[in-house]
Length: 160
Figure 1 (spheres, one colour):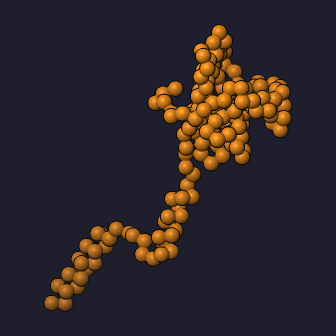
Figure 2 (tube, one colour):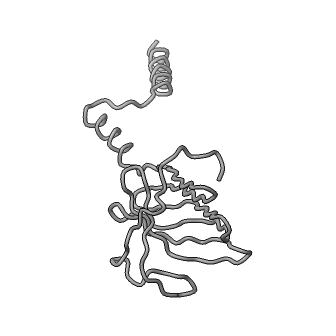
Figure 3 (cartoon, one colour):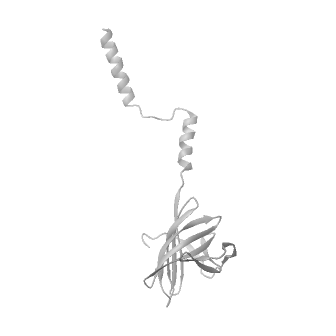
């Protein structure tokens, strides 16, 4: 009889253990599990467009913490069209990125800067120099942001 009770107790213990979905049991565990989710960086996608007459510029940005990647397309009437990848960082409300693009079959890299102003991106300009095969700003502190071609936040297209 003792063997039957012992076997039944073991079987019950195994059955309960196998069906036990682990759930937080204390307020501390609940707080810890919610904190873990909010600590992970969130990836955010935003798109910006400038259209005036036959001139178009589009920027698609994906930000995660201070890192930014994306794509830019510039097509101004009777000018060379260029399209390429953006990789950079966000410092405050300013984006500094390398723009690797193709224009007339030639691959180039140049540094670009944008200032986030409300729902717009305004491109920054400063004196540039060639460094390691790419055009970079001599001094990013000298950037001037010209609202002549503001890119307005828009819905992101399915492809760009």
